[in-house]
Length: 253
Image (cartoon, rainbow, N blue to C red; front, top):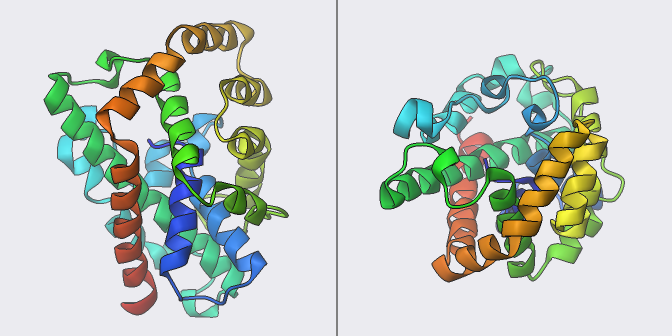
């Protein structure tokens, strides 16, 4: 999965390309909230297949990045507590952000599949850097690549997760924000990654192990991603894909 800061950067750019809802602070906040709060499984006892409607590339191959958005759209009537055309604009924005998250994840899985082929590996465990370090490094570079990261962070002020879905109660989104907010607003600083783990109640030995991994390999991971040039093309592709699937949500229903 692509991590929360990168989702925020993508969401901020997607906001510039849509005119489905009015330009109001509460609407933008709801949309960006939907973008960053979907990864409940990272810190809470929630099945990832339930929230993301797809599997992992090491388990399902290319299927893992082809059906998440289409499954979400096909099930929307049962996923929403109220019909789409009866939802307030803030709720529609939150649902749209959720779909934007899934679209970015599809692009991330596609990138992962391509990396697997290039590196000759079949599992993220064989990636050159530990998973937690890799995601923090990618998030860090995404925040630096965005000319509007501070604006995106300001738009999250007063975030209120919406009680709109049947498959995820609002309190889980609320708890997710409590856990990730300092990490997100810092732009993915390694120290805030460790603080996030503490807020999530991770065992101390796991936190110490992650700290050790970050101290040993974070700078190398940042340099590797910069050399490979993955970050900005990935963000661009995710924005374009998100705009396509959001058009399906708003104009083809």
